[in-house]
Image 1 (cartoon, rainbow, N blue to C red):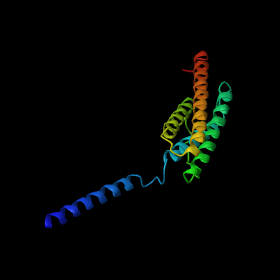
Image 2: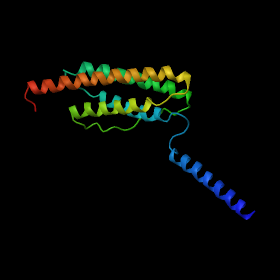
Image 3: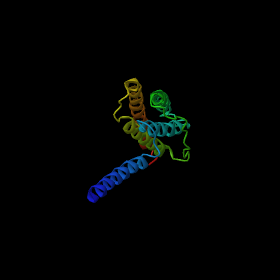
Length: 161
């Protein structure tokens, strides 16, 4: 009889510990699909970095990338509503990054956002929105790739290395 009580208490304590530790690990993220907020934060940073004036040989590509990023944020905001997420995140961004480093930083942010929103989506209402956001991110990445290649070629031609 005493062994049964100890076993029951041990099991109950173990289950409580596991459930609490899981809740603590996810403490900063409420509800389903917390990656929307992470992706949105990365995209907002990229959007802010894309607003800076650019060299003439890449300005067209960065303008298109900016619009793609803006569209992706809009789609994520709409998808996040289905999961009751707070989308009022506008993070501060370091604006003092050098030109080519800024394009690299933007590309890394886009890759990070893409990774975050590629997680499984179980809300049918949000799937199409998530897919459109992902397509916009891919288009923005492609524009940044073109901008980087144009910038590097221009620098090579003008001996700026």
